[in-house]
Amino acid sequence: MALSMKDKKGMGCLILFATPFALVGLFMTGWACKSLFEAVSMRSWVPAQARIEDTDLEVNTGSDSTTYRVTAAYAYSYGGRTFQGNRVGIDQSADNIGSYHQRMHDKLSEHLQTGEPYTCYVNPKDPAQAVLDRTPRLAIMGMKLAFGLVFGGVGFGLMIGSIVASKSVAKENALQRKSPDKPWLWKEDWAQGILTSSNRGKMIGAIVFAFFWNGISWPICILLPQALNEGDSKLPLIILIFPAVGILLAVYAVRSVIRWKRYGQCLFEMKSVPGVLGGTLEGIIRVPVQLRSQDGFTVTLSCIRNEEFGSERHKRERVLWQEERVIAEEMEDGDWTQTSVPVLFALPYDGEETDTEAEESVEWRLEMKASVPGVDFATQFEVPVFRTEQSVPGFELEEKEARQQAPRVSPDRKLAESGLVIQTLPTGGKRFHFPAGRYNKVALGLTAFLAIWTGAIALMLHLGAPLLFPIVFGVFELLLIWGVMDLWFGTNTVVVDRGVVTAKHAILGTGTTKIVDYQDVAEIKPVQGMQAGNKLYYNVQLLTMGGGKVTVARNLPSQGEAEAFIQQMEEAMYAGDR
Image (cartoon, rainbow, N blue to C red):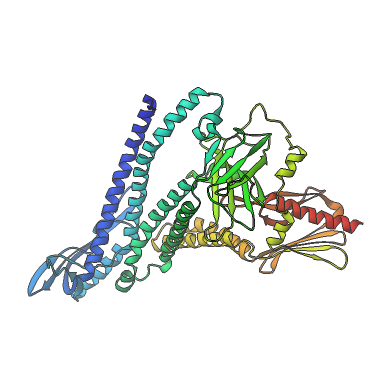
């Protein structure tokens, strides 16, 4: 199918826009590789005694920054011959990264005044080549590599992406012209009602991101021992955090490849297209292999908005609505070569429609996970959800459908599995205790992010960044530290007894306690809590007659479990009344 002239122009403009990025990426990567090669080759250069004859610190002040460059002239002897040299370090350009040029100028000026010899390093293959300082400047090399990989990745990524996307754009344009008032028919898989999972795309993304991250961090760390032994040892070892994160990213990429090879391409067959706001989303997820999971299949439907925030217009995903079901067993369809799991969700009438064209796009994401030996199963689909003529305000499932939709694993059981300890008191009341460290994966992820954030602040301080930046980053660091402490060491205890609800949240035993009389309780309801990735957690909030709000439980993993906990609380309160 041929592209329209407009689409061809758009693709040409995108490639033209991407070309400077690609060229800058090639230049910066080549420059970084040249410096890296020189640093490695200089390890074999032999030391010699040099006499400093002249040195200067060039200062160039521009409109928004000041750069420095140390220069020198020196004489040295090698193999019975005398040579003249002027190379100070590996990188000879001016910059304002740290205080390298100022420190080198101070050293060379001291040797110039005292006449003491300064050790230089001579290329034995070409004695006319020498350098005073062969210590690699990791910050400079890292900056070159970062610019090269990022700009090159953006440039070539846009070029390749525009060529690949042009084919699907042509098909979508034809579908859009055919059904202008039905956006759920504008994508080929949507129109067919058979959606393919995004596992392959996620695998490719994980590989590319791991490649870029490790491509930036590891080449620098190869030279770290030499930098610490021969030069300024003030460069913090915190830089090692970045290759450590690179290892984790590489592991994630490998697991993504294994998951793709093991489970293949999954499909979601929709019963009807689209999913209807004020109606249902119904269908079957088919996995091309047989799965055996003792914990069942966790199926989650989320409405997600891609928002922009901050002056730099950063992107983030915010969950607007989410519902989770645990299906204990697959469907019996007689095909033992695959796994079929039923999907049925009632959609809110006032929910957001799918909108992939807007700047702050909205998508409905269907996910299924299962714990199996080896690499756990996970798959994901982007499903079309719209308001149609079939949409009904206040829609509810019929009784038979509601029984089908109900989770086949009890929320009470899930509460117990998440660590909730329920104790019946001698007076007839109940004590609910949520222990610390219930979500190790979330806590580990936030801890890793905190480590990276701390490393970034340490590098800012070392490189002499304006004090405002470490202060602003430091404020956010305090919030991260509080979040990490809460995830690892935070506990919630709720006591329903003797006519009052007592709720205590504590970190390492220290916290706040709230007490509310039964008679002052207006409502107990679940509210959205923290969001970790695209997983939405729920808090349980107690509303008082006077309009006050008391959070009695935090970070329950689903709305169903939050509602199950509320039911447990209310039963304890009613039992106390009787």
